[in-house]
Length: 137
Image (cartoon, rainbow, N blue to C red):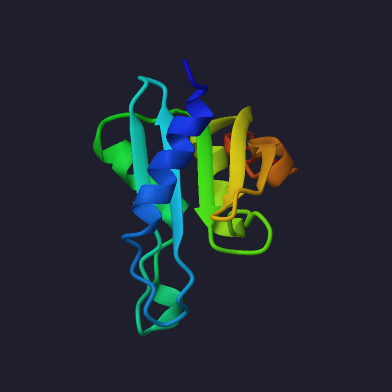
């Protein structure tokens, strides 16, 4: 049996082809494995009002939440770039919301290069619920 990472990369590669990136031409696909074993995908969706686009990782997370899951077991992101592309800062925080720090994140290029990391390595010092606790003062 192939590792789940291969299935996630295949799913991310397939959804990347459906990305809507007419302005940058930079298509990104993401796939996440939910705690229940289902794979959820997302692709970047640009908008002429550039900051209003949606990242692939955010789309995959939204699909997971819409399906009723709230925990991520593994992540894969793929783009056509010289080196594996990490999630943006906002998506790193989104991943940290739904994944433990030791969750594997595989970053890949369409050319076959990969970089395997963890959620905690992508976002050291992540803001979390513990930061919202009252200090009593």
